[in-house]
Amino acid sequence: MQKLFRWASKWWPGLIPLAVMWGFAAWNNTLPVEADLSARSSAALKDTVLDKTRIAVDGRDVGLAADAFSEEGRRDAVMAVEIVPGVRLVDDRTRLVPEAKPFVWNAERDVVRVTLSGSAPLPSMKGRLTEAARKEVGGVEVADQMGLARGAPPRFEAAAMLLLDQIGKLKDGKITISDTKVNLAGMARELGGREAIAAALKNLPEGFSIAANDIKAPPYIFQAYKDPVAATVTLTGYVPDNNVHSALATSASRKFFNEKIVDNLKASIGAPSSFNTVVLAALGALSRLSTGTLVVSDREVKLSGDALYEGAANDIRAGLGKDFPKTWQYKPEITVKPAAGPVDGTVCQQLFSDLLGKGKIRFAAKRADIDPDSAGILDHLIETALRCPTTNIEVAGHTDTDGEDAFNRALSEKRAQAVIDYLVKAGLPANRFTAVGYGSTQPVAGNETDDGKAQNRRIEFLVR
Amino acid sequence: MPYLVSFHLGWLIGSLLLGFAMGWISVVQRGNGTSKVTARWLAALAAALVAASFAHVVPGRFGYWLDLGLIMFACYLVGCTIGAWLRDRVVARSMPAV
Image (cartoon, rainbow over all chains, first blue to last red; front, side, top):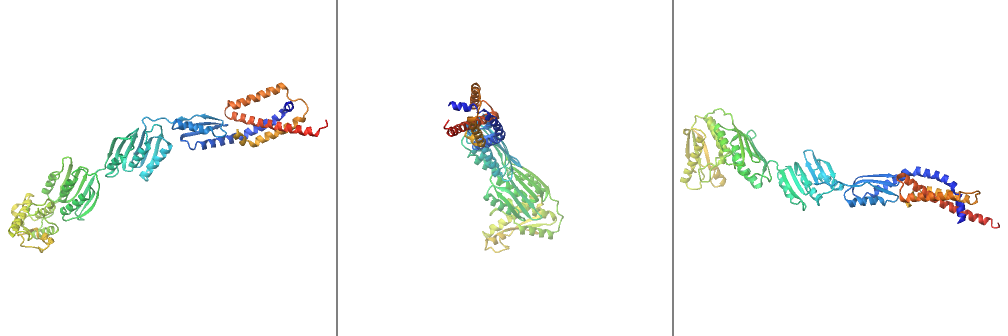
């Protein structure tokens, strides 16, 4: 031992080169050590959930600044860095993410983008929500303006995901979660969208409730355009279901005797009440116009166009809203088509025959009551009669062979008289018309078939 | 410690060799070494530095340099001891008659 002390007393000169080596070692290794420890610390934090993580290494001391989402997460992060081999000290500058109270999250949609704002509880969830929004709206831009905060209610993600599923059904609008209350406002993209959203909201996770659902449905629109040049009536827009659709189509083909029906209607829920009644009545009014447009938008009816003569215009204006429920509004904008020039009796007869060849004046079965669907053809007949004011006209009624001859003859005469009454009511002088009932004595087709019988049941206008 | 050793292995071996050389020489070197008092002071200084290192009182890069210096110094001392002991064995064997 004594020897060792003796030797050791002579060891000091080596300290000078050692010090030089030490200097070189420190010079060479400081930056690599710091870089290495920084990389190892980052790797150690890979599995922890932190926001705004910054690692600063000074020598072997690691300064860790980060926002953690729970006290436990914060402790775990510091611990993870502390056990990295080579780390001497950890300067803990972590803090908890601020708590949002109330915890508010928004998804807002406008024409060009979907904006997500408010708070999300975790960075990964923020990513998932943005991704879900992107998937839901297809090509529309999704702007992520969400911040991070603690204090989200339980099952927040499930609720937010469900609400994001609804954003695709909106044309524009805003969905907000405030703690556990959900607010929705805006306009649904399609008819039925509002109802679909309301149905989906029933599946909100437990604990969440709807504070307000102000989603509006787009207007329920039905349109009909009568084009006299193309001789078409184009129906567009919505009908409540297929039954109403077929009823409308049948009725339209009876009312528009001269025009082809172009049916572009689609079935959709969301129709206002009394839709069918109103649309049928309004189509009846449209059938009396020479050219015209009918627009039914929610509970508003707009009818514009040209009536065939002044009396019809007044009648349509007065009659349009008669059958409508009180909650409906209507706006007739009826003008009168310029009167066509006068013609002589032969041309008049030709015109009457043409009209009655294309369509028929219909009556209730076995009665002399004129079917309202015949208003269109009657208006045309009146217009024609107005063009040859000097002629006298025999209105002839015919029936098929069903029933007794005497009854048929009486019925045909009553029907002819009903037509004359209609014409007189429209302003034509009564002395120009005589009613004749021929019963089944002048058939134009065989009475063996239903089709033939239908042809035989008719009213004819004969210029005398 | 294992991290420091593995990261600076080259330098530590260097220190060890330097110590070995110094120890080898010290056995046959003439003249007086450091006085007892000086040696005590040096030992106290070394102890103080070791204590400072373990207490982590020196911050940042200086702390790292201190640790590095001490570990190199330790290697140096180990080298010295081995060197001196081996030289002593060699000297003792070559001069058995004295």
